[in-house]
Amino acid sequence: MHQPSRAGHDGRDSRLDLCKWGGARIFTGNVLVLALAAAVFAAPQRGGVPQPSGRAAQTAAILRQANDIEDNGSYKFSYETENGIAVQEEGTIKSLGQQGEAAVVQGAFAFTSPEGYPVKVTYIADENGFRAEGAHLPTSPPIPDYILRALDYIRAHPEENDGDQPLNRGSPNRGVPNRRF
Image (cartoon, helix red, strand yellow):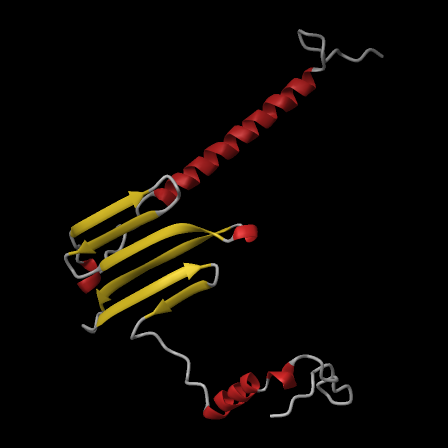
């Protein structure tokens, strides 16, 4: 029994061409669906974007602005707005010798809180981390007097803390040098 030929005009099986074109139709359909979904999600929602109200809705003109960027990587910028916001920052690259380099950034910003209090923050960020200071920021409690006295004693008696002391191997603090306070 003779099977009918499925060869196309180029002699190949035409079912391969049909599968290839069918896959293209599916791919094109997926692209169209994705494009339609993107258009729907990108369209403004009812009422548009909500606008802030009250103090946040106010815009402030920039009174002063400066930007300086140097070829060596250092920079400075500052600005001040009519509503009392002031910002300034400068950064440099610091050589750490064999350890490479570190960015050093320092600056300050100031504004008035919603309650009407002035807020000012100064900060520095370098190889030792980020440190900020401001009257409104929480601070650690003072070091208790007995700890200060113990630290003074340790400094005054370095011969007792030179590391030649035997280790206390019989206590739960195994491996900790014996120290007399």
